[in-house]
Image (tube, rainbow, N blue to C red; front, side, top):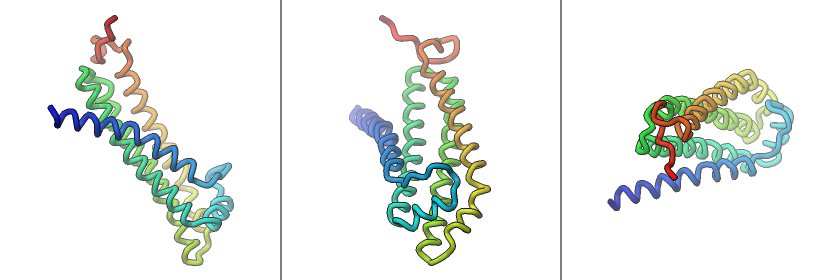
Length: 169
């Protein structure tokens, strides 16, 4: 019983921590009005390479935690009897998180250019063709997965859809 309780507490901590870490990452990240804007990125990176690195490392950690949070939520929905939508949505959430997780990794390139005396604008320009396709692919697949989770967690899903039973009054 203690093991199950500890697992539940750890799962709850991950579910609570993931969005909090992502929020901190977004707050720490320098403001850039339009992405991808190579010149604005260069200005932000040159202004504080440490902040740039920390913001992107925090983002990657938050995305890993977010994926874990959805695994925890899937387990909770499964335990409640939902076997259809969340099971279908979990791979989309994980894939979307992984695709979005590539973006912070790409953003270490301009930081490296700044630290080594390279051309930040040129590096960011070379990454630009990759940014939007990766971003959109991650966003769309993540959204499909989240929609499936929402459908699975919906009380209107009912037993006919394989969702958890509607709460009784």
